[in-house]
Image (cartoon, rainbow, N blue to C red; front, side, top):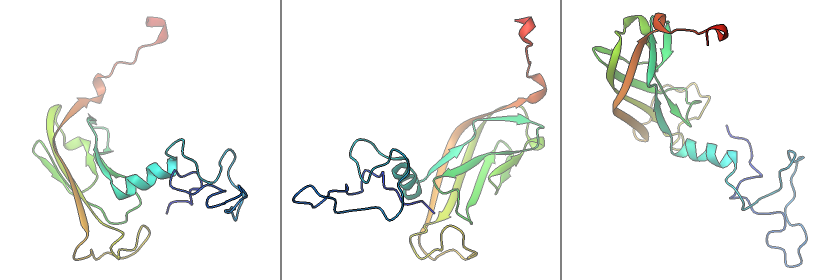
Length: 167
């Protein structure tokens, strides 16, 4: 859940609708340092988070290290709190349905990653984000896909760590 954003570019200022310049809007709790009610100079961090929730972006990893355990392969930026995201990916001859990949199953080289993630749209009667509901709505499922992304798998044992004395 997003915190109330007094700093939002969408928030009315403290003297909005005033004919004489007196305060018409007051905060019910102390404002964070440096924050005023409403402003028009910048998009706030809360504005950016809200946009990411409404318009999420699928982010894929572009580099993995072989034989280093389970690593994240992708995530849905802006919807990290969703309880039920469904992933699907193909990387070389490997496939999966989780946001992570076991790097012991990978070969070294450059591969094409075809990946998608689906998430219910929380605004359509889906309890967001901390619900125990596991049945997806009949409509309102959003699916994003990133096909043809290049991903490189390296052998972690080949990474050379240089000592400052060798430089």
